[in-house]
Length: 147
Image (cartoon, rainbow, N blue to C red):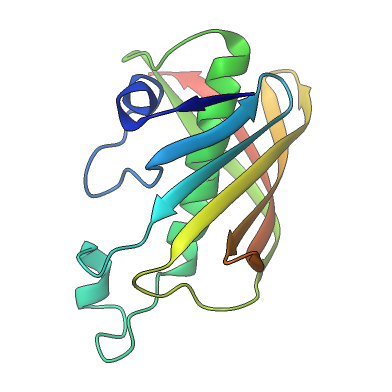
């Protein structure tokens, strides 16, 4: 199992501030799974407009963070880095459940495992936790496309 710092993550994800939602990879096993984290700071740009009196991370961004972790795992599994002539897209999200809100100051732990790959379509099981409590779960589908 290996880890990745932000400098290595930037080689795999095209996202940049304010849309880069993976701060560190804690561990991953090529072809199997990844555990990553997102530090949720009060300085996040979405907090100014998403319930300013009660700052909650939007659920759609939690799911996006899971997809970004999945992209890192997939590119590591394929042995390639981010390429400017291709984009890794969401193609489906199933069974999303939000169990509790993610607040400013939380450390969001992103866990993604590969279920299977069929003709360039990757399917994953994903969940996010804060303090060992499940906050979000989903089945994700993604693929890479040339642009």
